Image (tube, rainbow, N blue to C red; front, side, top):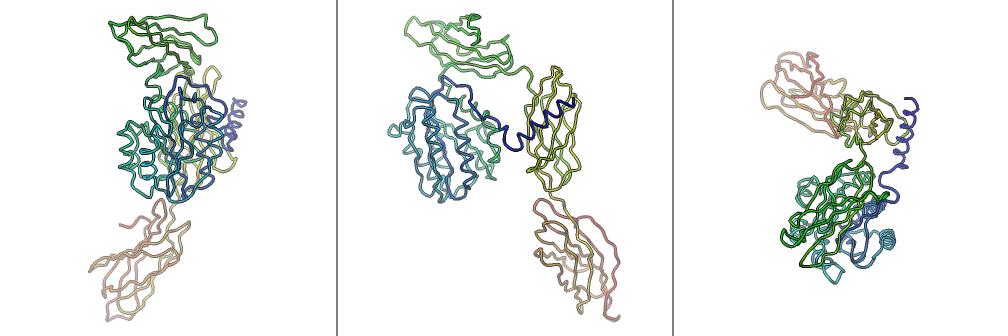
Length: 505
């Protein structure tokens, strides 16, 4: 177990410094994919040079396995700036090498974020024969944005979707969820992603698979892939009366094990089961028609690993010094989980071990207002390990006001003063609840630590509370009861130190 822990720790450190980034390196080639793929690239001044370069890497990683050309996938880029600009048309780069160099050579234009204008430009100019677009293939738009636009996007985006364009949105900022979910093609959980720019590789495969579902719609392709099966679908080419289909499939490393099936011309799908895990299969669909000749369609499908857990890691119940980690699914083949966590940036890592029957734990004794990298590793009975990481942020620790005191400033007037609260205070809220008359609330800047309270009736008892304000949560308020002496008594005041640390009511 110690050796495994050291190995997991090494993998965690590689991930933390970016040496084990998902989806890097050559990817298996994806055949039988045909479509026009447009990247709407935020090239405005609201995007930093670093963010722009990370988005370019993401674009290439996303399309790297595709087969490019007039019979495959074509790609184009439109810059979002003050004036929309086409980087290159669809038919400019018919090979992966040429497209990769073109993406690498793409330069940021700066300017305003006029996304609506870029969408209108795409509708009017790019999805046309003049720009190399093909009329009979699926159209896909991938909009990578920091979440903001200087002009309206709703109408031009809807016009694109009315043309049959499938819209995927990747937001690397804090964009309006309702606006972006309305702009993306439905359902939003498949077509809309919110992710930090450094974490773009995490969504690459999921987004690529979703794009493939669109651009393979007119081709033989596989969906619902598991470790032992996949579901084949294809366009309707025949009918019950005009012919039948012959289906052939075999592992790529042992084509002699080819299996053959026949289904009627009324079919457009078929489930293949009893397959080997982590195995690539060559599949051929041969339409046998007594009316027309149809060319065979082929595809290549790789089954999943037999044991896949965890497939998701969730962070919840974040507090200043703790958060809750959960994962799914849980499998009987897992004997235990290792949870590695440490602050970012940094290389300080701690380890928790959880029994394989559980799927959650609480990580405690953390630093407030800190981002942590959390890696959950499943340890299987076979000795295999599977890891998945997520980022977690602790909340800023709310501090309380100290030493609330008062000074008589004349008839019916007091000066309330307090010592500064800890942390990055955004300001203070002072509330005075008078025994008679209206209550009052004052907001002051973080540099001010005193206020004047006026119109306090003689002989009344008033409640004064001061609360510090923070970005993520309010601090704890400090309250005191203050008694104003009757006018006939000596000037001054008396107050009862009925002090609480609860929030103000």
